[in-house]
Amino acid sequence: MDFWDSSFWTQFLTGMLKPVAATAVVLMAVVLSFSQKLKLEGEMIYSVARAFLQLSAIGFVLEFIFTQENAGWIVLAYLFMVSVAGYTAGQRAKHVPRAKYIAGVSILAGTSVTMFLLVILNVFPFTPRYIIPVAGMMVGNAMTVTGVTMKKLREDLKTQKNLVETALALGATPRQATLQQVKRSLVIALSPVLDNAKTVGLISLPGAMTGLIMGGASPSEAIQLQIVVMNMLIGASTVSSILSTYLCWPAFFTKAYQLEHKVLSAD
Image (tube, rainbow, N blue to C red; front, side):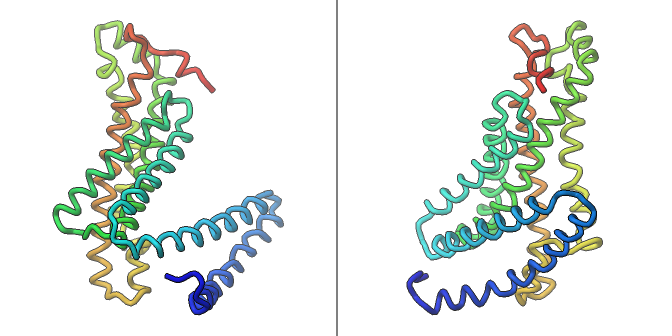
């Protein structure tokens, strides 16, 4: 990739004509927001502009990384995605102590274990062109379920603290006393991932499958990849969400195994 090559920029600018033309549908949304007095026009324009800049920048970065043979670039890109995902998930569960750290560790563990298995089983070769997009999908899903898991666990402990304290008074350990709340938070967080797997291909064609078909691949090839994608998302999301409960629930208790009311009462 030569940034100083005029043909590169000609090709890039030509390719951006369609994305720019597609902003017409955003203008439609802005007009509707204005007519309905939703006051979302500014946020819509900002979101689209930010997405445009971010995707354009990452496009240049990926062009560079894909030409490199050093595996260090794969690891660096992966750790960057995990860091951003951990921060974002932690923001969702901001009232959980050390939420960003817990989310980051959980996402790292869930996605790295899943990726390791996929590479060992020769499902994907360890090259930037395969690993980075696949890791991005896993990290994104793990980020969502981890944030929801921690947030929902705290909310349930807050609303059901009397039940938990009763169990503790009867001799239950903190883990035993919060077992039902942990299960509920995991079920709620993982349900969308499982629902997508149940309805994939029936309601909508997923992004990976659609991209391959539009890129010229046969439907059978696209289906094979999508099955792999759905399996890896379930695996990574489950590991990440379960680990996040093990890492965050001690923060809800004192050293004397009593509920930490300061954590549960924070707004």
